[in-house]
Image 1: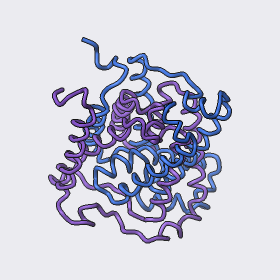
Image 2 (image 1 turned 120 degrees about the vertical axis):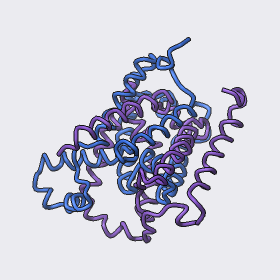
Image 3 (image 1 turned 180 degrees about the horizontal axis):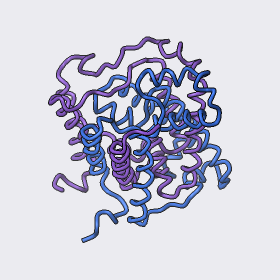
Length: 182
Length: 182
């Protein structure tokens, strides 16, 4: 009998159910929905403040967040994001499923071997994605799972928008032929 | 500057489980995310749908028992819609979402690490231009922190039941080789 923790992958339904149950736990234990993008906003704000303390007065962001009772700090979600990295690392290690890769095969098929090109796209994509997340107030975790399970209108709109936009971008990047090279 | 030690610990624990699940679910992989956007690989939707359905059952039960309160984002149409479009485009370009991007770093994926740096940059940009976005927030109106049952009528449990039914139907009919019994 194989140790399930050492399997390379689990059924998406088991994983989804697990995340759903995790949501029960996070609500019950800490009163928080699962989320990730807020931590990036807070980290950026804290870093900016550390580099240039005057931004605290100059940028109304800080006063607004304090007034909302959510000042940027090392909090529950910050530790959750740290935990995601550690948990994934552990899982990849146990399942011998590490991928020390810079250029995914699908990307290479369309854009070639250049690591610089792939890194530039990853950086730009990550930046665009996070800017959009903070504009909308959440990401695939905060809106996509936590918001949708709470039946929030904002979150269901977000999910529809992200999949439509993502599908269009994927089509622009890889075309219909890309499907055969996934 | 810091949340309570209890909250920090709960966050870390929750994150460890979340990261582990994401990695085992194969969603910390570029080709799985792009595969979804190219409609070739349905893993992402299976995970999200199941997580939403299962999560909704427990969270709404807790809300009914007064053990949890809704924590959702306001349906401010301009930032949510535009944010979702930017998010989806960025996610397809990067190849990961914020959570799976962090998890992918745990798999050793170098492009994910660069993308996480990009995410920080995007968050930085958001905080920096925050003052300029305030008028935009209400540009297309704001329906408030409203849920689908509040907006469309009927009990939340009807929506929860529909979600559960869809998840069940997808599992039964989308996995013909696995059959109905576990």
